[in-house]
Length: 258
Image: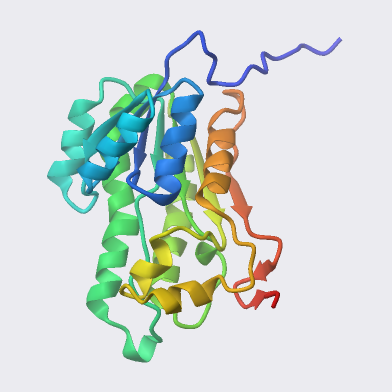
């Protein structure tokens, strides 16, 4: 008879686990913090907008707000100093800030995207790595299909998310001997209140047009995937989950209904 494994998920109610979620003031980050808290995790919800985090914590038990700017090394270190233990880091902070062709690209916007999406991820991981190693914990990165598909006008964001995809693979190789799990969830079209609105500098009509005729994913869909990845048995590492709306087969092929 083959030996059996303990296939219990890693969020057993008998144990208290601590998760840090960056970019938690809205969208995927907020939805992930809420779902983890509902499943009994102690959640440190971290983002720049402390007022949003405090509202989230007031509405949901198990969430502790922590101000964080992932572009500031002092801020990421302050986060690490405030966390006694870390079983899970959901490295979600990121964003897109333009949709211009290379010929007209704003280099400052590209630098900002790289700083938030890539260097911010590195700062967060570096700051929390001692606690993650001590817990034999898990890093789940919010990537994007932009890390695997390219599209016109997406140069800065596409390049940044390709870097995130590479970082996930590198961290997996470097931390396997420390018992860490490393995963990436790469969503396609996710309709949140802020992502496209930020990309288009507050142009609501242009933002709405991105999702016109598409039953797009929502933040809760991605939170559900992130929590599923994070709660597999400890011997299971989900390397990559790419998730898209049924109507999106590629960056350039989206079936829009009237």
